[in-house]
Length: 571
Image 1 (cartoon, rainbow, N blue to C red):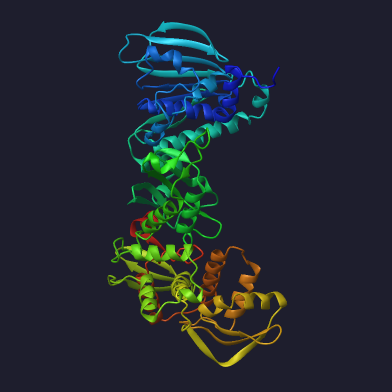
Image 2 (cartoon, one colour):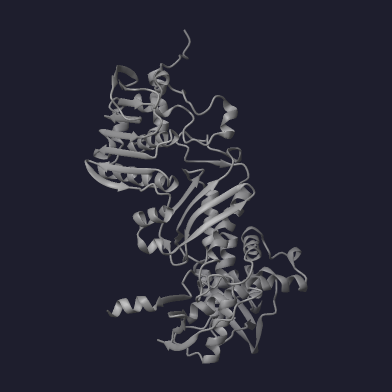
């Protein structure tokens, strides 16, 4: 007798349940998504003990027809597709027909449903894959699923569930994400008899964000609406005043389905870089709409992971959607500054996806000039302001249209230098050096000397005229050409210390960190007095930049207070 046997249906369903249903939150997700697929506009979720003992999902969708009820509990029975070719035209949340059968195999389930075509509803009770009872019942149009004693017949899986409070949190967070993608559906959560959460279903993303994240986040959002190559990206991102310590506030949807994808998060990280601070992540809630033929959601039973056919193009589209939106933020009283940001964004995209420093990439002088102009707007409205003064030898105060602006002189100058040095670096320009009267010979440690030799191109493209001089020494003939009153003598040492201490393996990260470090160390510092003429030059130059909002490390260059805000403080 052979060793290979066919598994029985219950065992097959329990194996499938292990893939689809890991915890109560998966049950809620599958049932709520089925409700939305059924056209529901109101969904109520009730749970007890974190969903371990009781889950009830009630909707006002179209219900399940009596003829389809016997198949509703069967594995791979679905109304969403007919054959494999339908997957390229399927936009529903469910399509495999695994969820209900998987849930039933590990729980006690009650189904109550009624369609508009039937005068009465039907109630079915089942347990562990077996139908126990069927009867007619009075019911409203729609469907109710009640799931009790989850994992009662798989005690090992039950043992691995978290505490009730943790399982409850998973359910709440998952329902909030579904609500953010389905703004026209009202979703309500009740836990152990207590109302926890309710979305209005009024179609407003900002209203729901106010409920979930609060006023401070809501007022610092920028609307995203970007279409390119058959892909439309809509939603919101946080401006440079909003950044988080983790990725929990980075939520991507694909045709309203919450997904995780490394390409999307990497693209977002690069687009936010320089605007969120080191180690922080930009806030975003974005929905990507695209034809089903552009991706494969059939990678994992949970459908959380997705593969895209053209990942490189998607990376660029997401980057452009976020970056172009960030550049539209208000700055010094202007929200509609003149100039096309697309060239600047594409230039930045080239910088993070290409390597500019080989001899083959050297540009002629005409192209260098053209590229350098991309950091500034071709036409800029005149910046009109009333100069108040400088406080703490750090913050420049100006008044524009009944609003006070506090300009961080170091962050502002750092952004200016960063943009200038980066353009020189990308274009292999080495004419931004101020020659010293006498060369400076510096004795270095072995590690420091090795770093300088390995990265001479960084120093030279950033404005240093430097060359090896003996075993562990370098000769500095010139340093970056610095405006204002920064202390020039320590720039080389400061940059070298920072880079050696924080040396990174990723080449592009190291390039950008080096440029940002030079800008930081060369910029005018706090406690340095600037004249009125120097302030005018700094503000005018900053206003012309396409990306003036933060220093390259993410610190805001300006903050503002309106007259109304000040009056509220003194009332």
